[in-house]
Amino acid sequence: MLMKEYRICMPLTVEEYRIGQLYMISKHSHEQSDRGEGVEVVQNEPYEDPTHGKGQYTEKRVYLNSKLPSWARAVVPRIFYVTEKAWNYYPYTITEYTCSFLPKFSIHIETKYEDNNGSNNNIFNSDAKDIERDVCFVDIAYDEIPERYYKGTEDLRYFKSEKTQRGMLKEGWRETQKPVMCSYKLVTAKFEVWGLQTRVEQFVHKVIRDILMIGHRQAFAWVDEWYDMTMNEVREFERATQEATNKKIGIIPPAITISNIVMPSLTRSAPSSAPTTPLSSEAPEFLVIPKDRPRKKSAPETLTLPDLREKRSTSTIPDNDASGEPSEPKHN
Image 1 (tube, rainbow, N blue to C red):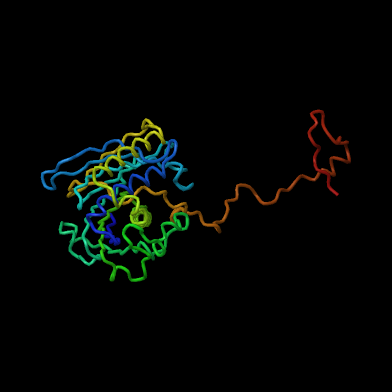
Image 2: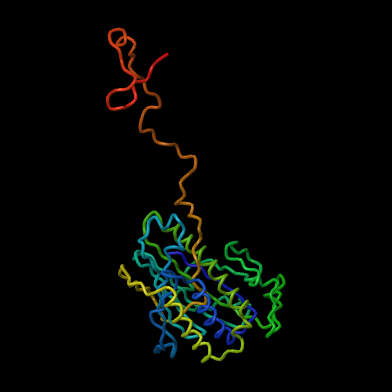
């Protein structure tokens, strides 16, 4: 198990982001979906928890096969999906991810939102606070983003919102920007396979960090599209977009049973603030075949032919036999 805490700040308030998060997830999922690939919404309904009160439960299947890098497509089934289950008691959410063919793999994300610049070091006051973990600040404007995900319209160094007049974020903006909020995400990746666990879990966290970066960038880059929406309006947008997305990808009957993995000390909550994003096209280091790997020799490098000169002294060998096959090699 590898746990990291991510802190992602945005020039928004927690109340504003409640709308922006729902809008961004729906729009991004629709854009990334195509026939047979993308995000299928299985359930999206109100849910009530005795501890956290009223919220929203969602279940999605994320079909990824064509978006996987070539090294991964070689080892996964043709129909491959990740199941997302989420409980949203905003400003507190929990999201679980399990894989349709890897029962020992899971991702657990606990999220809390606060109106500050990431300065709360004790926000997760559960048993997790005693577990050693890295704290990673993600700067949505100045951290490096993979080139394949870059869009000039989403570059927050140059984007300025017409409706809020916020934007064109300068270096160090977290210390001076008003308003500012922070998404605190406690992410646990598990891949309980001996010999691969550490490297796979590290690779998963790299992918998650990219996803969090892209999702939060888009939430602010699209602010003028959702800023005036009410909760009822964004829920209607969410419903209509989900229907369109399901039609766009087509409903694919699953060929693999989902493994229900129970997480320890689990409190139920909701959809994460990050959308589904294609994985890296580069294989992790432990799956790369070394270029200088010596080749196996299945046969000797030279072949010694019998000397036919003695036979020629007693018999004549034709250029081709009756079958039309070439004759034995001639020696000078």
